[in-house]
Length: 276
Ligand code: MG
Ligand code: MG
Image (cartoon, rainbow, N blue to C red; front, side, top):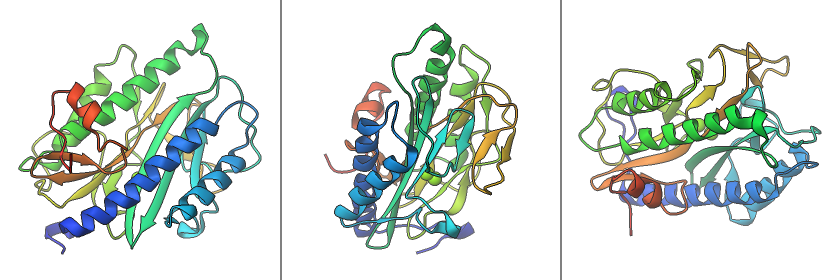
């Protein structure tokens, strides 16, 4: 069912299918995180992910999406999002962002995580702050996914957390989060900046992908000649974290988190939705 402005409202059965897709994504990202490291190529990680997604009875949604060749987007260092897996050999100290999507019974899940490889030295301190702030900003946004609230409550929560960081960080505005359900990308757009209290009302059955893309420098981006890879225009490094989140009457249900988001939301004093 579609409401005003093309926002799709899912039935409980449809949200259950999205949870299955979300768990495939969450488990695949966990597997990739265990395999990523110095000496591994991004193509090897992609092959591992595709096999795992298909073994779980799901379809990798990125593969063939507008011609995208991989099952993962892997974006390294100054790459923000949409990096194409290939022969690149990952190295100690690289900042690696992995984005994964899967479809189960026609319903989508989409999530991303970032990490720095190897043991960080003192030059990596800024990267550690970037990673922590970006992931925490995602969870602040998730905590704002409350029935009866408004969409930009989420955007404002993400922005406020990034602006409160100990470093001046860039919030990418050229790319944003999105509604998700029977398609990977559908209304509404979910920016990572904004003033609270605006946009569509959050109602049970809505699902959104929240995905802050945060940089150590300017938020301006460019696209490489491969027509996919988004990089920071000033060469600074970027982090990207994402979850697919459903609005429920009980609170946010993080469909791509293995525990439904319970632990991280507990830490923020917010009740998680979904079965317990
Ligand atoms: Mg994604
Ligand atoms: Mg997304």
